[in-house]
Length: 151
Image (cartoon, rainbow, N blue to C red; front, side, top):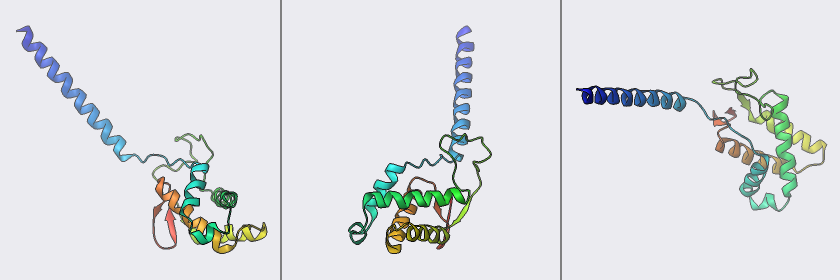
């Protein structure tokens, strides 16, 4: 008789464990993993994506400079957070979608490049397009239309 109680108890414990794991997995499945931007990876990715005509005119450091300017623009419009910010911090909008105007970002970075004697506007646009592809790849952006990206 004691074996029957042990077997029923074991089945109950295993069933509760499976239900608990299923609930936890379902909850995690609904969460979006945070996108982590790694500057050196971004520079390498963008440099590899550029057409040969552009790579003939810009250096690796030029690519890095344009990417920093683009990140500065994100910070200026409030779409960036500091490294290490906690997910519970109000600056991180969990579950909310921010829509950016990629044309405004491009205009701002091209203007800065012209002010600071950076790469030509065409090269800057190519670099920024590759940067947006990198941001999409890491999950920081998703396509929202022809002129905008969602973050």
